[in-house]
Figure 1 (cartoon, rainbow, N blue to C red):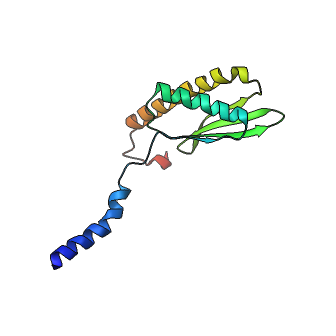
Figure 2: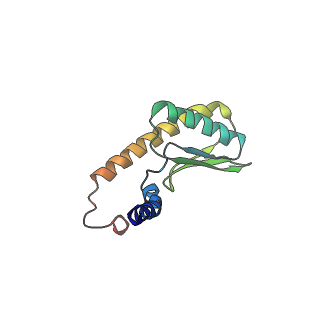
Figure 3: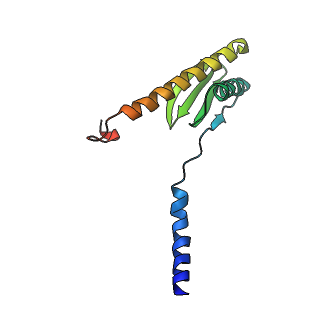
Length: 129
């Protein structure tokens, strides 16, 4: 009886560590845009990424609208800005711009993955370069 209760206690206390070892969820593109132009950019951008690549990464699309200059839109990957552009109120050029941004980001993330695989980090930590 004591062995069974001891095993049960070990199982209960080891459950949080088992959950912590699970992989994080990937494939999210989060929309933090504000204006109509920002939402349309996000829609075209996310459609292009979902159609052309397997989303094994997370992105955040952010926007800072301005009545005078249009909207500043940027995309973050792992808390780093990897794309930034101003969007003019002219929506005719929005879809090609969003698709071009998606292609550039897809290439940049692929390049970052290759660089991480080839990076020799045995001598110096990543923060110490």
